Image (tube, rainbow, N blue to C red; front, side):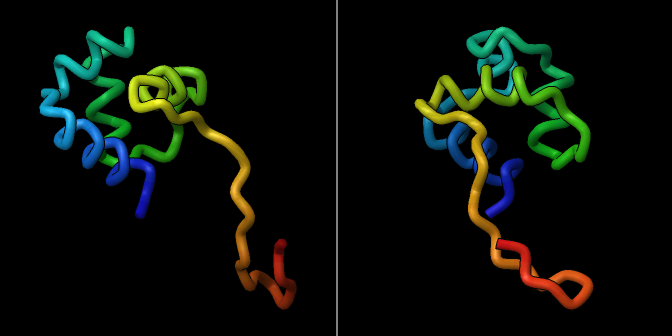
Length: 73
């Protein structure tokens, strides 16, 4: 599941509109919309402000990906 899908799912599960999520996280409505639409360039501190409402934060995740003949672990 992508970050954008995760945030949208959490928001809906908690019965929040995008406006309410933005207000509670202290970010703009446009930021929430960009986040839920999967914009590739977002400020991590603001993403963490949104995730904090759900008891979460960004962090490194072990990734097994085959790229240019090498496994990245």
